[in-house]
Length: 202
Image: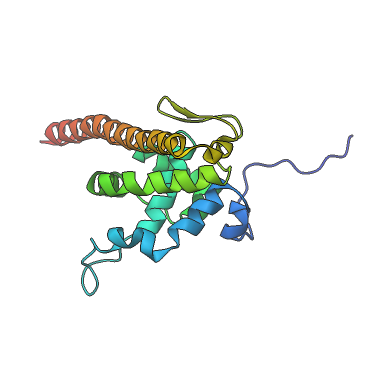
């Protein structure tokens, strides 16, 4: 009989991993982590929290921003999908520091901070684009495609640079609007199911 290595998927294992090492270096996700570690960049988000001495601990805004912005980079604009990826995708698990935020937490954060998120995501796109970290082929944001090696375009005139910046700003707004729309559509269905379920019990 042939001699094979064990091939059993029905087993539990422990991984010895470092979350920062999972992000790699010179990658979009590492740049994202590094940028959002800057207190000045995310200070507006932290100022909204009033649970210093009371209430349960909240998810740090930087953590939620990391997984949300990375999901945009990967083409996902749904809080339910982000919740699932924080449980199943190693890069998301690393960016979430092993936490698993519920989709309602993510959706509420986006709807409460959409304008500030738009400004911040624009900054993230600008910096990552200048560093050549936006995709190998295309980074498509709801129809706004940013071409390969787009960082080379930053050597143009002031007018050209402004045009590129405006395009990134438009892309940031579009993807956040798409996220809000997706959550609203799915949220309505979820609420209807809950109401129907409760009525059936009564």
